[in-house]
Image (cartoon, rainbow, N blue to C red; front, side, top):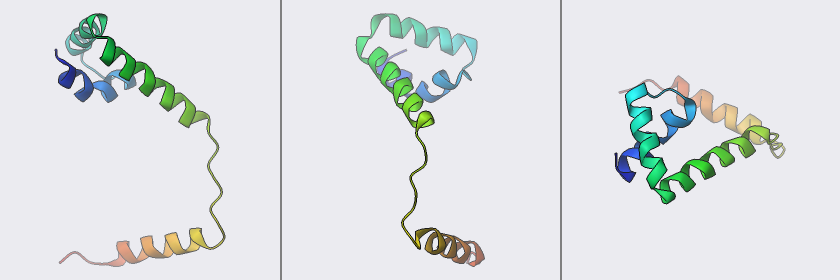
Length: 79
């Protein structure tokens, strides 16, 4: 596996949903590729930070405008 393949499979690897053979190939790549190892570590760290964050409060009126726009989009019929 090369770096492009490793990055392509990154999400599935972190989620634990890779087939065994692909996971093993990716892990062999990570043993020798410092750059991809850093990407995996930083991605995991970013996910952990985001999971721990509390949602930001929306400014007044934003929620209503957002919901209205979503309703308008959902009500439109495709051509």
